[in-house]
Image 1 (tube, helix red, strand yellow):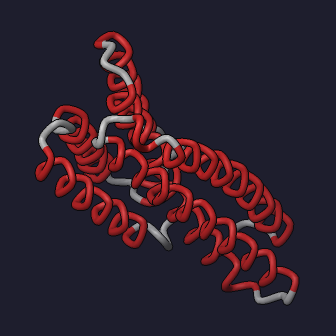
Image 2 (cartoon, helix red, strand yellow; image 1 turned 30 degrees about the vertical axis):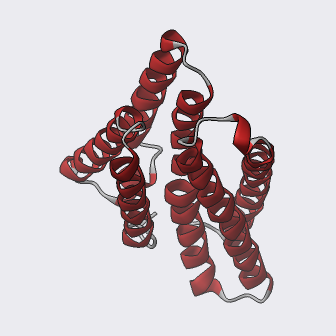
Length: 194
């Protein structure tokens, strides 16, 4: 069990990281929306993932701030819960959508096959490797290797479907919404287990 000071430090770090990354996501969202007419219409899904990431990171920062408030009022039991919820939201509804938006936006703004393929491969490998690593929320929440494998496969499959289905209108939007629902479920599923 973490000490009060450790939880306070984690809350401060969470607030800082989420606020910074939320600002970055919001900046790129605004930049892309301002030039929306200049891009392929498929950029909308990449922008949607950036919007989800922005909100996920902002709400995570709020949850971390509430954890800090709980520490200040000496409510020992709930601050750990707040940190776990903040961790889960920031990862599944902040970081994952933010990273997944990168190849989707690249695909919509350039026709260069090398850039599109290399961005997809780097994103796919990094998300799957992170999911399997001991640093991910999934690994911290579940000691079962099968859970990490399942979540890694889900991430890889949906990223691949989104990447290669980007030019298939109905399929692309439907797949992106299903994936966001799955990410929301995962944030809920692993909210107390970190």
